[in-house]
Image (cartoon, rainbow, N blue to C red; front, side, top):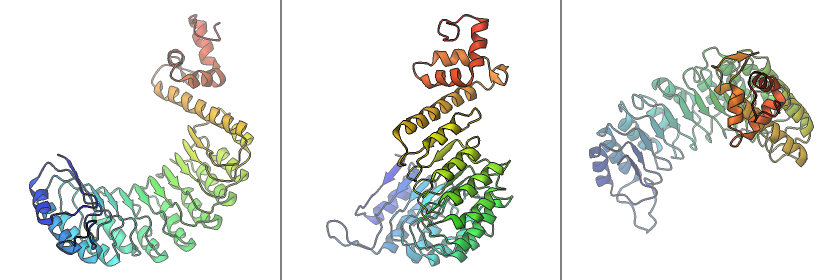
Length: 405
């Protein structure tokens, strides 16, 4: 037995606490919706208030050093419960994942939890869907847990001051992944965010800023940070109000940054038209691997195809769904995207072989051997790299090579 989950269940708390303490084979404990101040589905009242139930469960956790993951999603934590959680996981030797999403957790409770480390090996913390606004407490939580690399603070009430407190004093110096979506981040707060992204000590690899009501005028700070950032690999700006001007700023910053490691950019559900989309393709198509432009207002598929037909394209996935693009152009975009992806896989998988003009001489026989499972690879090399086929057919007649025939 490694995983135990109670979802919306009426629990015998003392027996559960005893079981948690004694069963050292449990590595994942999920108490989703199971500790709340309410009546159960069969109208029987709980035997104890939520904070007493939580107290007993955390006491059991303290004596079980095998648990790696603890999920308390939609439990009733509040300030009093936060103290019990902190005491239960404090100095825990193996706990790596802690989820406290939608737990009625407020700033006072978070301050109690941030006073001491939440386990010795904690790497992931989810405190989304609460009403947190104090950036100092969030920062203290990050600093007290040096192994923490993933933080989800989405759907909270992070104020401008809270944002400045969190990112302005080293919040991104140790984190690698941060979800700050649905916090209604204002323009002034984004200035601190942009400065943090441009900091040489920034280690952040993934940043999510979905649904923050950001507009073109707010992208100045973000683009300034991206101009010198050397760690970010994935940026998500879905479901905002970005238009062509804001997107152009982002595209130019990524394209002009020689140290950029950006590989994935998500911009679905915005207000991007043709100019912004074409600017993105021109500046980032040789840098990005994945680009999501679905759900915008792009109509010029022909110009997108012109960029995709270039030889130095690194893009492997391009999503253009829910845009008013003619069907013929949509098919052509999909065709070139598939070809680029297939060809890129073949070249990468043979990077250690002998080369001809920078490309592997052994790649062509492997392309032919995979025609049935990956026909796009054949099209890619016939169109983009015909010299490989010619070199193969000149050294040895290959009956499967169209050029040799």
